[in-house]
Image 1 (tube, one colour):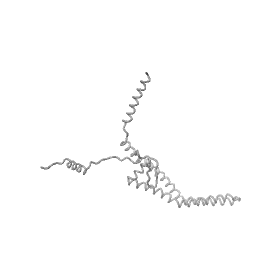
Image 2 (cartoon, helix red, strand yellow; image 1 turned 45 degrees about the horizontal axis):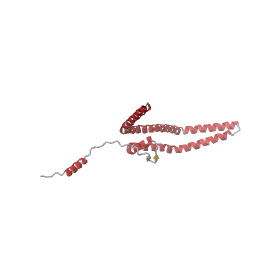
Image 3 (cartoon, one colour; image 1 turned 135 degrees about the vertical axis):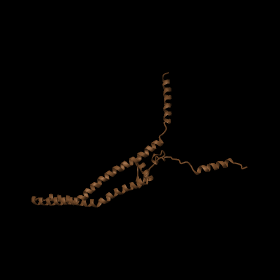
Image 4 (cartoon, helix red, strand yellow; image 1 turned 60 degrees about the vertical axis):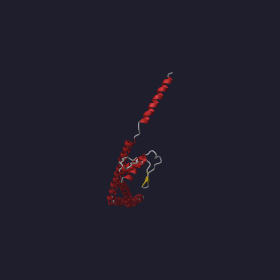
Length: 200
């Protein structure tokens, strides 16, 4: 007859139980919302965020590859806007500078007939320049509008994503009413006692 050792039986039971532990689904509290996080400062992609929306959004970027990829695309297209317009902006600045100086020169002409002839010459040249660069100017204006639209949508994206995080935090971390109820009850007792003694 085999002897059964209680200790060995317990060890076997625990080992068997640990092989297939029950899955624990626990919502991790974002770092920016943790109580012991008074000095929390999240740095990513060479940017430091100092408000809760940006902190929460930046944490989401670290955990969500698709969102991080989109953020990189937003950064890239914003930088491309500046780079692609640099050559034309330089070109435009030089032309505007020339026509500004040329008009100042023409204003100094005293002969009215010559002055009118030069004015017409400059007006025609300016109109020709504007006609030649109309496509560039129109496209830059269209890009500026798209940039404003993207900026608005970027803000909307951050708010939509972080509101969801906050609502999950509210559902999971809502403090109990019991401590407040206990203090309220203590106040009631002390108020009653104070009132009673003040009537004696």
